[in-house]
Length: 483
Image 1 (cartoon, rainbow, N blue to C red):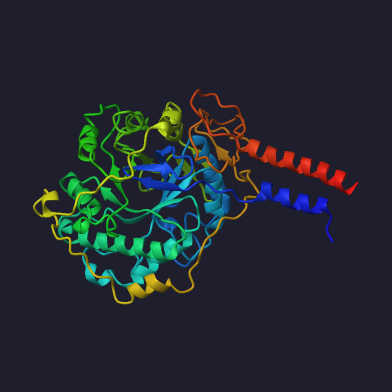
Image 2: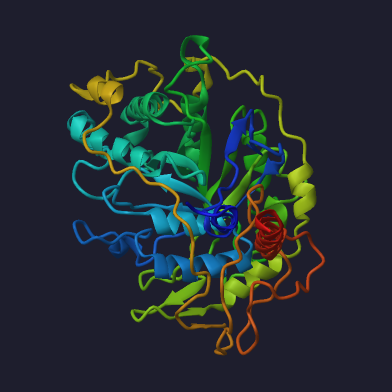
């Protein structure tokens, strides 16, 4: 029979290795709010698609969240940068994402996930909506729900990305977007242990932008329980280019456009690269007093430098090594200027905001759909919702046993970043900028002293230290008991 000392040791050892969970973020009116602390949550995000479109290879066992070694490297760099959210575009729901999801969870980084992919039957085809909206497609998007529903850092799901963009799509696509939203939310309600918000990511096509928002965010028949209404709205905006003004970038127009929103609105992509290197002056505007009352932050495009564009913050190499670009340093400088405590303390909007009732009067552009007759669910779809898909791959958090990055990472000056590691945070914390300066040839230990004056997240080292203290106390108690 095990002694009391053995039992106490086993119990307190769990406090060191168990996978801690971030607090869920909920939608409250037009804001994101921490479900436990009630702090306002502003998205400080980065688009994360290593390898670009090639990073998602069907039947190869590879997607952006399938390699724990690489996720650990990237999570360490994102944590130092101040990121609290990643957006991932293409995922294989059949793969094991436990380690990557758990790593990002441990450092207080949430995940916004697109449910579609470029593969056949895995997205709506604007040119053939009737055929592409089928049960095979529903199995695909429901599988993404199952794969990520148990991760507490799953912040939300995009039911579509820039589907309304080309001429003609504004007239036939909108009802199908509401149908997909309805189906996803119905599946989540029936098969998920918690609510997961579902939204849409729109192209900044000004002719259709206001109508897209109005069409997707209203309540059909005035019903607050309308499952086809989106829970949040993302905008892919690249209008701030270089050293321009708030008005020059058209941000004043966007604030006015969304001033009466009843759901969270944020930039699901931003970061114009027409002026290089990017210095990201729009960060101060986005998280300033003119915008935080309307928008909930944004997602910088993008983490990885791709050959086909020039938006990356980091160069990644085939052997797993990485090198920061000057854009990373510039974004970090802008983040370090933010008053995170102020952003967290901003009052969230009331829970009882009432969405407008859907009506043709909400639509301004003449060619935009004014029909709120939503397509019926495809044959077999309701059975999938009621019973769940067959053999779902359901993810779960796992303990993080190694926090040190095993591959070399270099600063923008070419120097090796030493002692790079993730710093697990207490359960009530999301990641935030902490004033650090990630440069080469210097210690990059996450436990290093912050040189900035802004608010930083509480050190996870204290969490582990408490655990060791508990173990010591347990040893003393057990020794005295058995004596």
